[in-house]
Image (cartoon, rainbow, N blue to C red; front, side):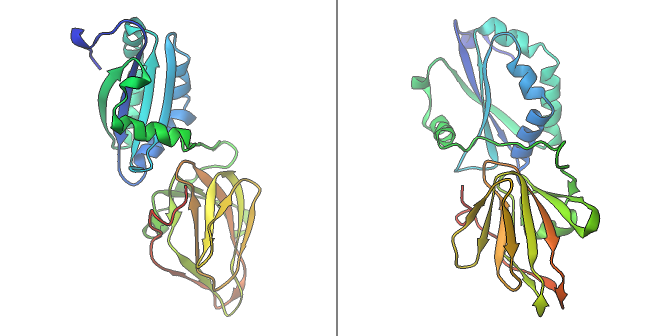
Length: 257
């Protein structure tokens, strides 16, 4: 990103970069920036003061990067590193558009548009990643994509069970595990933060170690919190004449933070 003479400042420089995608691609971009070590490498560069991502409550398809450097020389040096090519490649991979709204020295210079993202941070909705070396992410869950909002991934395991990964804000539709006898599903939460809700009841927050025994013939949904990746192991409970009935999508107003 080239800077004209009029944009140059003395002292610390902060930039707001907005990455926008579709179907959770911006959150996936952030996850890959973090899991690949690219973001950590940038934070370790000389002169970097802050390199942090945030998701807006109002626009979950846009991620804000707050990128701060001690001076113009440090920023110019960063722009000459191979990291810029890596960022551009990841941005293209996830199909994102990017804009740099402005530069500023102090929080007093924040625009109203910037402030909604910073408010999100104060309410702890920065993107929470998971360690895929412990519980593999698996492959895109294309066979069931029509029953999800956002992207999910499936890693089959022995014994007919699977590890399911949800990107931030991804959830399955309301659905029912129908059975004449027995049946239902068992969820074992292993990483990140998510939600489970039965029809007519309050949503229950899910964290690693939580176990959910979903009864047969009960309408429900489960998925990731808006600011976190989420993984759970899913096991179908044997029953008589079992099948899954898929219902309506879980809208944004229903999904807790």
